[in-house]
Each structure stands twice: as structure tokens, then as C-alpha cells.
Image (tube, rainbow, N blue to C red):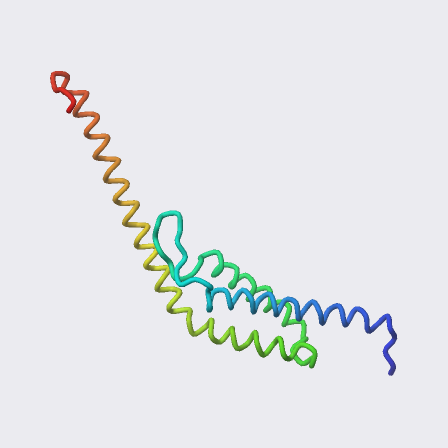
Length: 141
């Protein structure tokens, strides 16, 4: 059975869309696995080895790519090169997940400590104000 031009065009568009998604996902994974700078400085002056937004993007692109690949395009020769690169990066990403989890747990602990410190300072300031109000004869330094 011979394919008509009308049948080939949608297939080519679908293939190029799959390749584009694989490339996008590969770029997102690469940005997490091989960041351009050693540490990302956040507004809180902490230093993380990866960008949280890059990690979020990598997970989102992996999920999108999984949906695209479920459509049965894996066997197409046009997609093979992009798929091989994506699979290699995905294996590397998977092997780094425990490290990413460690960084995220450390960041969560750091933020919890900052929150506790902030609460303690707020409590101290509130107590100090109440003490000053209840001691009218006391002069301020």
C-alpha cells in the first residue's frame, strides 16, 4: 500500500515534534546534570549546587517526554539518535537522584533553622517591647 503526501506530512510533523520534545527534555536534564556554574546563589545567600527551577523543569520535561513516547514512536529510525541521548541523560539523572534528595533535605533543614531563628528573634523583640512598656521609669540606652 502506497502512502500519499497527505498521510506522510502529519507523520513527519509528529516525528519532528517527538524529536523536539526529546531535545527539550535532554536540555533540561543537562542543565541539572552539568550546570554552567558550580553553585547557584539564592536570595537567602545560601548556596545550592543546582538550581531548584532547573530541577523542577527537568522533572516536568521527563513527564512530558514519557507521554510523548507512549505514543509508540520509539521504533522510528528518525527518532533513534535523539532517544539514545535522552536515555543516556535519563540514566545519569536517575543515578543522581539520591544526591539531589540530599541537597534538598539539607536546604529544607537550613530553611527550618532560619525559620526557628526568626521566630525566636520575633519573640525576643515582642518580649523586649512589653518589658519596656511595663517599666516606665526605665530609660532607653
